Image (cartoon, rainbow, N blue to C red; front, side, top):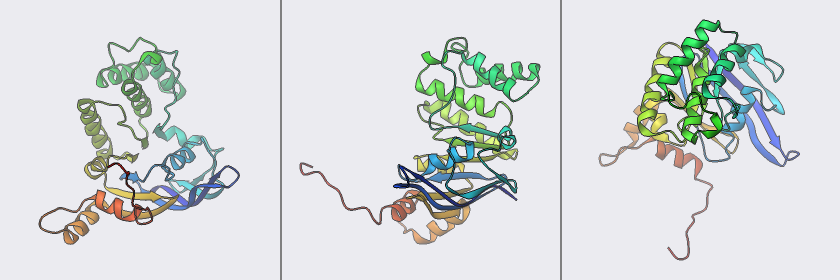
Length: 259
């Protein structure tokens, strides 16, 4: 069963001069851990912002569990969690206040909110800073607050745009294991990242978005078999090789005159 499907999505900026999305077709099945990768400016963040209702497509359709959703649809977003490229929170609230506010917005029982907030603060190592204003936090700490807010209400779909940006290696591994446990319990996860090794280690399926179009899509197990067949004995072919092959064909060779 599909969780999300984008059908023929188009999105332009500057009165149509810039095509962010150029007829995107993409299906994400329920329970998958889906990696969306692509060069800078490929349209990944725009696609997520359309799903979050922060932007409107020019044409095309978006389906969530077989129901079409529009920018005016709100009920479906109660079942989603987002970590956006530009996280949204109130800087003049403390972490504890902000997470409690998020819980209230999702109509969670007060006792559940308090318990979950306390657990999330401990899990993300924010105990010492929990009662300081978020504006005093480092980039990585703010990212942890965004992750905590995204999972507080137990979403069925978790959408993560570069979620590990600024987070230290030890915390990143704990979060990675948490995401795998959530996915194991049936949560569908859509993640974007420029760290292709992360996509390989986490995802069950991936797609490459390039110049506003999906130019490659495969299940990771099928891709692994294809790569093993195409690689030689000296060097294992990787997702990075596939990425470079499908996104670099039309890029000119570059060099610096003094190097």
